Amino acid sequence: MQDKVRGEAERDGTGAGEPLTCAVDVDTSAAPPAEQFDLFRSWHSNIVDVELLRDEFGSFAARERVWQLGGLTLAFIEYPGTGYRRRWSSRKNPVFDHWVLSIPQTIPSDGAPFQTGQLRWQCLAEPHEDQGEDDGVLCLFLPRDFAFSQAFTLDIRPEMATFIADYILLLYGSLPGRTVNDVPYIAAATTSLLAACITPSRDYFLEAREAIDAVLMARANKLIAASLGDRSLTPEKLCQELGISRSRLYRIFEPAGGVSNHIRRQRLLKTRDALGDNTDGSPISTIAEKWGFMDPSAYSRTFKKEFGISPKDARAAGWLGIRVVPSAGRPNDYAASLSNILLNNYLSR
Image 1 (cartoon, helix red, strand yellow):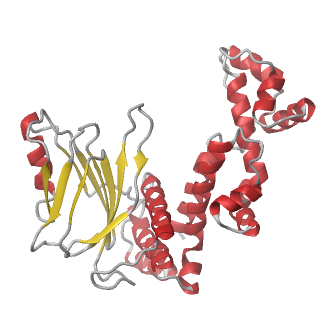
Image 2 (cartoon, rainbow, N blue to C red; image 1 turned 90 degrees about the horizontal axis):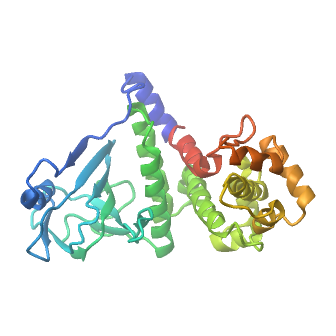
Image 3 (cartoon, one colour; image 1 turned 135 degrees about the vertical axis):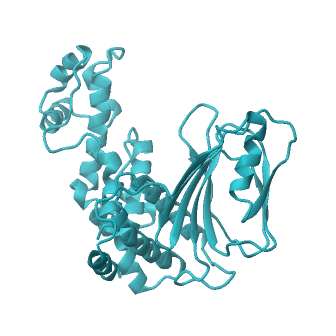
């Protein structure tokens, strides 16, 4: 499918090299505080009616960004920290009859990054009413006859709903740096992924395998990051948590040199950061043991192989304010970006 799309795009020469930008980028800051919610409400007046469940409010800071991805539309609407519960209901005769897949997001009180809620989906042509007090929402709009869907019904199993939400978040994170010429491939890739999740078949799965692997990689990274200090973190445990086979886990992590190597590297990065912290006077062996390195000699050799410097010298350099970076050819943010690298490769095929 994507080869065909690529060929058509190359023949008409559209969008080559042009950065992909928002089709819409609006906010309420230009309006007086008391009128900001009415402005926000007007943005969606041809789709839904939105109302606050509390009359008095001082302001309503909101921003909406929209990307047009062929026949698909991705929108991120932010209204952080307003604290107002809202109710929205569909119009009787809406202008659009699209499907919308939405992921609500909230900002924790401790200032941590956005937390995502469960995927919701609805057809805009169907009567609908809901409430919420989230701080934003990421939405993917699909035509009602989108490839594999049936009118007014979209049967998504709970485990697939979680998977689709992870993919949409990865898709949103991959948009910076994309070009207009990527749009047909992004649309085709997203269609394949959603088809594989909603209407499973071997053909759909093969078409979307790389995107599915990217989502699994992102999930694995989260599990690894949360359990680096746990000595029982093993490939077998990851397989159990992710619900995949050992061979598939190893295939997904092949670009990182294998899952065990990936985990070891993340632990080494943790020790490197601790050694560079001049407020942490813990012995090097204690820091190493905290992150799963029980043999000091083996840890020292592994650290030097990774960073080109011994732990002792890394501590001295860090305390002098010198940043210790990985060896040449090993990007410092490799672990965090690996799932995006896989997804970008898929979207650009």
